[in-house]
Structure formats: structure tokens, C-alpha cells
Image (tube, rainbow, N blue to C red):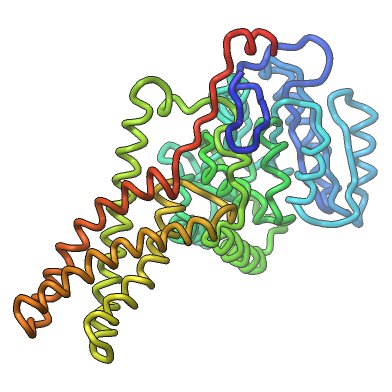
Length: 426
């Protein structure tokens, strides 16, 4: 049984969920609703009929009423009493994210899904959506209206807003999933148990925040192309929702930038990453670390040279070199900590920076020694010669810096593999 090397918890690996003839259902589909007395019964009956005919496992449909003020609670209660696979619950506060969090946190089903009450998404995509979660292949699944093979009918305004929002996500949060706001998603319950406590939003940004956190933690997100027809009677206020989403993007982006999110709670707790397994795991990690270090190093060198040129106009060569190297070294340590060696959160951040300053001192000795040797040899060297010598010295210091960062500042912590006897005991 694999072990979560970051939190110390022992968790089951992904496995195919067994078919059940009794007990809790395999799938729990949540439908968040607000003032949907007119369409609720028709949509629930249609969904129930589809699942009865096509879904090979036990299922449940949960109606999550978001503080409706019309007859929606009465309609939901009637469906609950009439159909064994339907249940209803009521929340006294609005918010799609709040409803999903409440239902999913208390569901006993191993696969959790949700869809909008208008059923804009074609139901034939439901089984392909949840199948990878049932098989253990993926952690989350989303319907995508922006996939190449999707068939979508909607107005140009909504099309523009959807695509613009995804461009914002890709540029600001480096999101790789294609459609954050399609109301058609699913997640494994064991994943949700770790993921939901970290999601702050209770409204429409809930989906995006959940997906960004999952993706940053290395969880697998499966995308399904869908057929989707816009509901002309939708109650979604586009401008208000867009503003709230942008606020959410800013909040999550800032938290990711400063390492405030404990993503190590999600990193590979549900089975080993096959890319890290076997004899080639260490070489692969080394290659990735070298690539990240080189990118950070090039950017740091450019920052260093710019700062040196700026400081040199007011300071001597030695003082300008020390100041530029100090500022760039702090930024370099922070960037390598997060990007090269994958250290998240604030734990040991101060210690890492102090160790980075020791590495900085070694680099300072190399570059300052080079400048001193140049001054001794030429007396008053031109600025371009100074820069050339500093580049050469920095290249030498860079090799030593990588070795020290990898072996001393950010050493790889290995967790002993359980013995065969321990695995049997578990």
C-alpha cells in the first residue's frame, strides 16, 4: 500500500470500484437549484430515466436547494418521497459551491458528480464522464464545451465570455484544462475529501478553484467533449459572475505565488507516479531539475546583470556586484525552491533562504575574486570587459550552486518502502 510521503497518511491506491448490488450507490449526482419549481421535476425525471436505462451501477440523484423562495423545496420533497434513488436537502444560504461542498462532504458514494438543472449538457456524456473515475484511471473529470469534437449551441456573447475566461486562466494560473465553468463535473470521493477543505469559494468560482488546486497538485483531470445547448432562460448573471471569478483568480494566483496553499496534502497520495518508478526515476528527476534550474538561472542572470548595470552608475564595481548578487540570489532561491525542486508551502522557507545566502556567499567570493583579478591585471577595465568576466564567473558559480542546492538546501527526502511483511499486515 503506497504511503503519502508528505503528510504521513497511508492511503489506498487508485483501484477500480467494485460493482454493487446492495449498499451505498457508486454514483451520487448533485443538482444545485435555486427557484426552479417549473423545470425541476421534468429534469430530474429525465435524468433518472437516463441513469436507469444506461448506468450499470447503483446511483443517487441529490437535489441541493440553495435557499429557494418559491415552491422548489416542495417539488424536491415530493420527488424525494416518490423515487427511491432521489433525495433532497436544503441550504439556507445561496451558492453553488456551498451546495456542492455540503452534499459531497456527507455523501457515501465513491464517485460524486454534478450537473446544472437545465440539463444543457447531453446526458450521453455522463457515463464517459464518470467511467475513468470508477476505473481508477483519473481523479476528476470535466465536460468540455471547448473540445474540438464538442457540439455547442449558444450565443456569441456567452461564447466570447467563456473563451476569454479560459484565456485568463491559462495566462494567469497556467491552467491546462480547457473549460472551467461547464456545469458537468465529477470527482472521486477520496480525492474530494482532501480537496474540498482547501477550496474557499462558495459560488461560481468553486469549480475553477477546485480544478486549479487539483492540477497544481498533479492530480489527473479527464476531459470529455460534450453536446451542449444554451439555456436562454438561464439565471446566471454574466457580469456579476465574471467579476467574482476574476476576484477568485486573483486570490488563488496570489496564494500560489507566495506558497500559501498546502498542496503537498494532495501530491500523489492516491498511488505512485509511474514516471518516478523504477531505476530511471532518479535520472528523470535530475533532468527535470536541471531544466528548471537552467530556466531560473538564465532569468536570474539577466536580472543580476540589469541590477549590476543600474547599481554601477552610483557604486563601485565591488559594491554594485554584491548588491546585485544579493537581490538576485534571494529571488533565485525562491524560484528554485518552488519551480526546480517542487517545494510548496512556507515550511522551512526561512531556513532555505539562509542556506541560499551561504550559497550566495560562495558565488560572491567567485565573482568578487574575478573582479579583483581583473583590476589587478588591467588597472581600469572597460565596463564590457567587466560584464564578460562576471558572466564567466557566474557560469562557474552556477554549476556549484546547483550541486549545493540539490544536495544541501533542497535534499530529496526518501521514505523507506514498506517491506513485504508490512504490506501483508496492512
